[in-house]
Amino acid sequence: MDIKLKLFLCSILISVSSLSFAVDNGTWTYEVDSDDDGFEDYQVALGVYHTCALGDNGVWCWGNNDNGQINVPDDLLNPVAVKAGYWHTCAIDDNGVRCWGKNDHGQTTVPQNLVNPVAVTAGYEHTCVLDDNGVQCWGKNNYEQIDVPEDLLNPVAVKAGYWHTCAIDDNGVSCWGYNYYGQSTVPQNLINPVAVAPGEVTPVRFMKMELVAGAKIIRDKVMFPLIYLVR
Image (cartoon, rainbow, N blue to C red; front, side, top):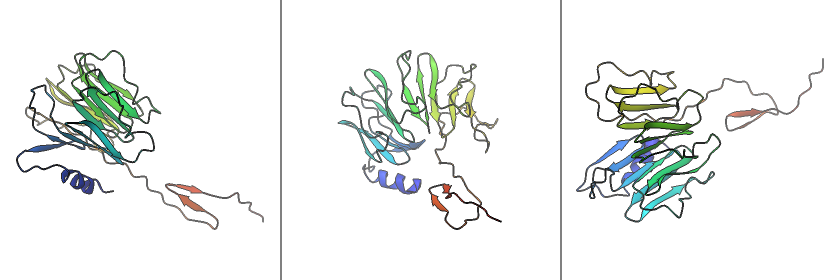
């Protein structure tokens, strides 16, 4: 489903007649913090094939569940944030950060050394958190998207894209990871950035091929039967 259509479908789930909202890295968030805990009261997080929401009755997820990404843990205690990755989901509750779903690269294996996490973000197959120690990331690292720069100074925000990650600190915006399109090369003319949102567009692999008799396409792979050439 087209991401714009998904955003539209999610927006109609919530009345916005009297409240403003923001779109951030695939997450729609009400700008209301009634209990002044630093977290917005109502959130909608969009994965690629699943959706999650945080409301008065906790976290709910729906959509594709091939990897258990919509199976919200029953023991979430007073969740305050939810983020949806490609095939996994993460939340912050009274016990810290919880993640569930696909874990082939350790993206849902939360480190045990987190201290007072205040933000979590889920990319394609990696996850990052902002806590008292700064930014920590884990999961797939094929483009160094979890290699947090050592010189981040008092970071206040972190967001995960598909294969790259960005943060805001005292020096402005820093990004690392995949940079084929320059998405990790931050412009030098930013002034007092207050938010950053890496895109979550799925890379599309194109193929140029000639089909031969007996070949068939399964998704993006071409399957050929065993062929013997006889002169």
